[in-house]
Amino acid sequence: MRTVPVPSWWGVGLSLVLVAVALAVAVRAHLDNARDIGLAALRAAVQLVAVGALLKVLFQHTGLPGSLAWVVAMVVIAGRVAAGRGRGLPGATSTATFAIAVGVVATLGVLVGAGIISTKPFVVVPVGGMVVSGSMQSASMVLARLRDEMASSRRQVEARLALGMTGADAFAPHRRTALRTALNPAIDQTKVVGLISLPGAMTGLIIAGVSPLLAIRYQIVVMYMLLGAYAIAGVVAALVTQRRVFDDAERLLPLVASAPGRRRGRMGT
Amino acid sequence: MALFELSGVTVTRPRGSEHSHPLTGVSTTIDGERCTAVVGPSGAGKSTLLRLLDRLEEPSHGEVRYKGEPLRSYEVTELRRRVGFVQQLPVLLGVTVREDVRTARADADVEALLERVGLRADFADRFTAELSGGEGQRVCLARALSVEPEVLLLDEPTSALDRKAAQQVEAVIRGLVAGGMAAVIVTHDLAQAERLADDVIVVVEGQVIESGPSYGVLGAPQDERTKLFLGRT
Image 1 (cartoon, helix red, strand yellow):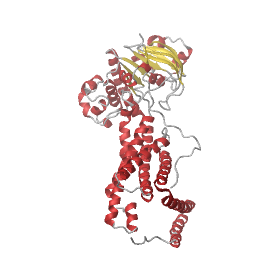
Image 2: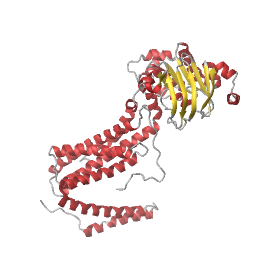
Image 3: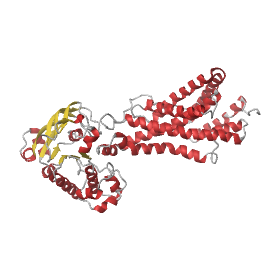
């Protein structure tokens, strides 16, 4: 295999010119966010250096157990991020974390179990990252939408409950709306892949010198995997939330008020 | 036997909405085959009392009985089919009237139900978005009737309607009660209570302060707070 053309540290430093351009635009246009741009660029560099160093150790010394521990850590962080979108829903953090975990276990389990992808750390960690990210986006959108539905459609839900419908039946139209909303981006992304975007896994393999015809095989697996992860995480998030927003008397619970000054659960990337 | 009996019922934190208000130590009875009006000033807890009867609210203390049995002894979905509930504003759940009336029962005879609420059969295929407030509220009544309830709970069902629409809805309620159905109606409109109700329950600041036949409670109130409320409105 040919040597992968990686930028030198000098090249990385030189790319700071582009950050300087962004800063100049922000200052000149009085956008009042130059500090945020600078901090974001610095934070990205520090985070990526740290992650790169950690992954190097992981790939060389820990094997599959270390990779799985890494994936678990990603799931926990993703759960907190997704829960931030569902703030106000009872048990949003555990719901999001569980939904993402189920999405990851189901899709990675199938891929690894069927021997479609390798169990090498340098495969499990990045593929796991993609699945966690997709599951997180899906859980996040489902929770946000369900929270909005609970706030805006309480009277509709109560009207159905008053007809003797169960909470699950009364909430079904709102659950369907939330799931459709969450799945649409994944469906759209799958439809246009390769036409208006060259996705990350395929791009990475091509840069690494793999034939495009081989790279697409990986990308097809990735797209199907993401579609599965989106669907599974979204459905699990919706079903668990639905169980938690009704009490034993089939009454729709109120949204939980956020405590003042409480951490929001959203984390930067 | 009373239809509903409330014994020492307290609701400290109603869950319905920001408009629900607490109740303290409420004891009263509601009889069947007649119309009972729950009246009182805004924020008195009238809607909370009504919602208790359908388990849309739960008491923190005390007990509510339906036909002599604790509400909690009924399967909640079964209870709600037997005790219908109509909200203050028309909440329409289907794209068409037919779809709306069949929300809970796919085999409901839509035309017959519309006739019971004074709407023509050809309303069945109208879009709910095109209905007036009064028509919408009557469709909500038809939907509530689709599960064949024994009693109807009505939470200020005409307060958002114009006078003519309110009269039409009142006529429907009067007809249902005349047909043997029990109804409990929350209203802040004393004239409406007089027109519709056989019995009246007066709720002030989360407590039932007077109850009995409407001619007695509204015509010759005994409690000073009832007199004050009637005089003020």
